[in-house]
Length: 272
Figure 1 (cartoon, one colour):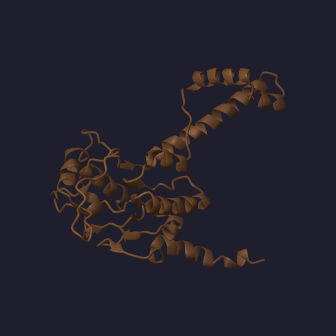
Figure 2 (cartoon, one colour):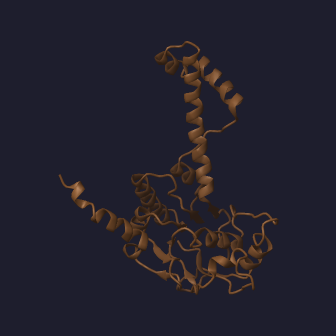
Figure 3 (tube, helix red, strand yellow):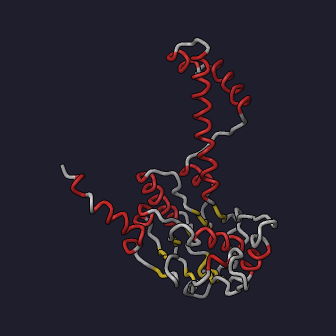
């Protein structure tokens, strides 16, 4: 389902192109973005993938939009001014029926949010391991220490141990985070959702996003440079590394071709 049909970056400029976000678009001549059910903003680091997602989030006033400190030059009034001057249009069907508003539960999910949850998982595991090691240092046998953590007394002591270290809530995996935050009939901006995922799980995530878009009337605009995500997603791909933000096939992208060349040169090492 398409909710946001087009988005046009503002032509508003300042004399000082070093002020964010104008330095991102210096020497660029982007056309209007025309979105599909799934659209990918591809580009290497510094190409402006996340910036464009955040501009869209600000222009549409989506939950999750990133706020900036006014003490940092160019990250407060300039960003808001730029976003407010961007243009967009909503979906209109062949009969002229037009969507009047972006669904209210639409949101922008940043890679930082996913990383934060993953760090909580990692911290949880570290604290449990530290608790076991602490019991071993106090004379408990290793096997008993590992078993003790699963008893009611062990869990109670572990809770106190965690509280003494820091108060951490249970984390979630990337797939769980998305599952918990995505509801039918909405638009979602996803900033590198594959962060910290293995190649196998990146493929799984891409397949899941394809299903969600198809069966739950969802629209996704995704920033990524993962060859696994790019190859699996049923998406229109904008290459932000080009001057005019060209639409390209996943197999034409520099990052993907780099992977191909890398393994092609080493293919004999895979042959027994």
